[in-house]
Length: 86
Image (cartoon, rainbow, N blue to C red; front, side, top):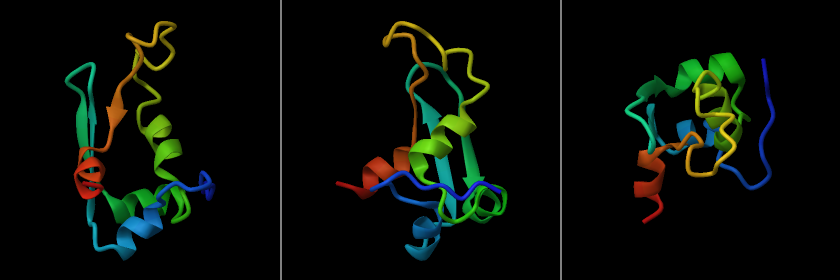
């Protein structure tokens, strides 16, 4: 179980404490998207897992993940997190 948190990043445990149940993930560059139950993510990665690191794990199989050009790189993000910050 991975229990790392990026300094200043929101963790899975913090999402649960805030009342979130599911975490939506989408890509800006392609049509990939998913919806994850936060408790299952915590079971797999631990409550201290930061969202930036989790994003890399969830998109690890993306063919754009290692693109050289910034315009071709994977654009995975959490749309609900952007809405919560407004």
